Amino acid sequence: MADAKPLVLDVDGTFLKTDLLLENFWAGLGRDPVATLAVSFRHLRHPEKLKAELARIAPLRTDLMPVNPDIRALAVKSKAAGREVVLASASTEPLVKQVAADHGLSDRVFASTTEINLKGKAKAGVLVEAYGEQGFDYAGNAPVDAKVWDHAENVIMVGEQPSVAARLAAKGRNVVTYGGGWRFADLMKALRPHQWVKNVLLLLPLVAAHQFSWAALLPVLVGILAFSFAASSIYIVNDLLDLEADRLHKSKCRRPFAAGTVPIGVGMIIGVALGLSALILAAALNWAFFGIVVLYIVTSLAYSLKLKRMRWVDIVVLASLYTIRVVAGAAAGEVAITSALLVFVFPVFITLGCVKRITELAKAEDDERLPGRGYGRPDRHDLLNVAGIGVFGALLIFFIYTLSPQAKALYPDRWLLWAAMPFLAHWLIRMVRLGWQGKMDYDPIVFAARDRVGLGVMLFTLSLMFWAAKLWQQWFGA
Image (cartoon, rainbow, N blue to C red; front, top):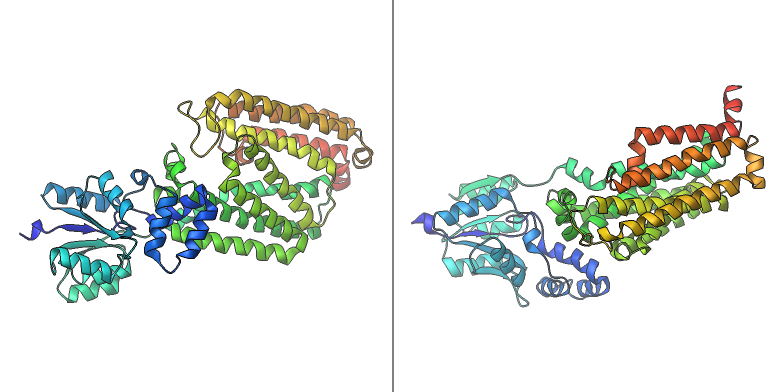
């Protein structure tokens, strides 16, 4: 019976909405980056050895990986009809067997070993040897699968390949096509453009120095664009390093790479392109700004690879990354930045870093440590204490600054700065409280940018500072 013929499924991009080799590469970078890069360079021309070595460095949770629902439904239907459903993949054999076991498919698999890379012609050869010419149906997704489809009775194609489908149909093959590919909207989601709002911190030095001319503003706007590109490239890296942790998370499991809606390879290409674009824009401004962008990228990579898993160190690094943006704004606009501003903003950012972790813990469902992080729910009180110290430190530094000669020069009506302090305190304490209650976004600065109450408080505080500096009188003649 034709129906008794086995159904053979490719794994990468066909049964799974991901690629096991790239999954292994990124998992290896997260676990042991030196060994992973060394193995990758050593076996670049020997993919069969590369796949086996990467699988050894970083075991994968294949049961968490996204599955193509159409192909899974086909597999279930075929099994119910009494057909053998077999995986045949260029991925390394232990992982393919693991996927088969996860989904109750045949124990018999065809996969790469340390001696052979089972792809294209090689895969076709072993399948014909096992089942005979046109003795099986085959599902695949890549142009290289055409070498296997030539020997299959029925062709199952994931994604559009019109020329290949037409050629196979002309040879009398029955071709069935399922949807594949990815959407630009999902890629944009991976870039997290809503996070670009954090880069308005580059404007802070201009505001502090009362520099509001277009000559100062335009280069800072270019700098914001460069930082946005750099940030998106790092978000991609972070998501690729956190694939397993995101899949274990209640909401992060819907991120494009974790969910398989955007291929890992596409993310890698876009990430490199964005990083290079950021560096080109930075170099076009000035070399000081270029150096700061490089520092930001290097620090962000270190955070993604290792530092975010280290208790307390991660919060200091988060605060540093926010502070780097402030320094970058001064470099882009070529305005002087005072040590007083940096000393003030750092404890503010320490507080917000604690709020970020407090929020994550408030939304956690149990006391276990967060996947990929060094904190569990029992740490909430310690984080709250550090956030409180940050609030107190920021307000103390702000008050000391109001007594400085620089403040006397910039703010003739300094009593208005003191009047602004309760509102600044209210904003910071409110952020901590909302984080403790789990009522904000996972990123406090993104939350702050769309929180109407908080924005109102901050705008009123800023207006008092402008009044103290007599800027309203200067602009409007009041």
